[in-house]
Amino acid sequence: MNDQVKFNVAIIGAGIGGSHLEGYCAWPKNYQVTMICDLDVERAKAIAKDLPNCIITSGIEQVLNNPDIDIVDICLPPHLHFPIMMKALDVGKHVVCEKPFVSSLAETDQIIAKAKSVGKRVFPIFQYRYGIGFQRYKLLQTKGLLGKAFTASLETHWDRRAAYYAIDWRGTWAGENGGTIVSHATHIHDLATQMLGTVKNVSAFLDVRVNPIETEDCAAISMQMASGALLTSSITLGNVGDMSRIRICFEHVTIESGLQPYTIGAGDWTFTARNETHQKAIDAELAILPKIEERFHGLMADIYGALTDAPQASPPNLADARHSMELITAIYHADRTGRRQSLPIESHHPLYNGWKP
Ligand SMILES: NC(=O)c1ccc[n+]([C@@H]2O[C@H](COP(=O)([O-])OP(=O)(O)OC[C@H]3O[C@@H](n4cnc5c(N)ncnc54)[C@H](O)[C@@H]3O)[C@@H](O)[C@H]2O)c1
Image (cartoon, rainbow, N blue to C red; front, side):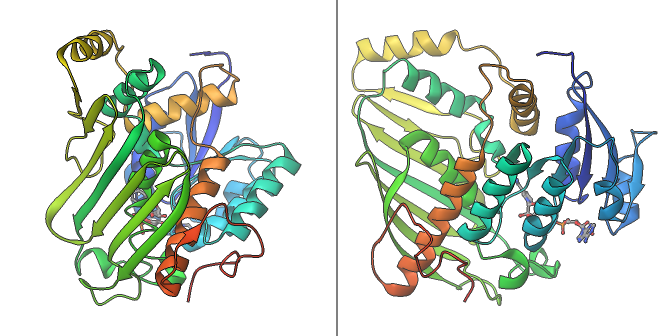
């Protein structure tokens, strides 16, 4: 990587923010985390224990008013993503923001316009892309070894009960901005669109079947991709244990991911070719794939590349965030109307300003 520029980072929110911190700290020549902000100062101090010079604060304004901060990394509860992102852009910071990005397409479009007007970058978090399984897929796709995509099935089968929902913002429309399609399945849907392209049509059934919460915790979704590929996504928070899986049937190869719930892009993906000659070609390509950095290590390296104009860098961007928000809008609308919803979705759509009931 280019080591000439070093960015000062402030992380706001010390839950998953601890994993972001590890991602930045993996690249000490490129990043320095100089502030950690959380209302719970002890929580912030705990994740900063190896950073003696890091400023700990409970005040977001103190972060935003600090001229030395280049990047504000937002790991706050979902309902705070939009207002804090807007404020951070207004004071000229680059932004990294956790999922779910915001709570509507209208907010997404405001962020896109704001980032453009102030000339700053916004990186939504989709860290599952940084895994060896997904990178193997990308290599074979680039080499033209997969052929036409026929069908795909996705499973996000996790176990989330009372202890998980003890945190007040979870399971509420006001705090979480939605349920499992907004929170848990957003990663696998991002990976699927990375592999199969954008979504064209959506049908969906959503329900609250597992927990006494406001927002959906089970879903059965069908998608037709712009390429014509057909996809089903099954989601529940009532599984025994946690597992995720992706299966895609391409013309020449069937791909199956491992079952790791939080690192679905990593692990033991299998690539089964239709015949022996093709299998040999695939195995030969996969044998020379270089080591890759996984999860937040890989994501933070890619963000650095984008900020320093490295030609090969392609971290998740605002177009990805918009497509994710568009898909969520489509899923809620399809479920509530009982009708198929087509994408793209523009400003005249009844849920453009938000999907909260
Ligand atoms: N990418 C992933 O795999 C992943 C995993 C977990 C969570 N997340 C997302 O990250 C975000 C945070 O989730 P979490 O599990 O870390 O939540 P959390 O509730 O554990 O942590 C959020 C932290 O924000 C702090 N906070 C709340 N309001 C604040 C304010 N006004 N000022 C300063 N600090 C404030 C809280 O004190 C808390 O410590 C959510 O959007 C969630 O969906 C993403």
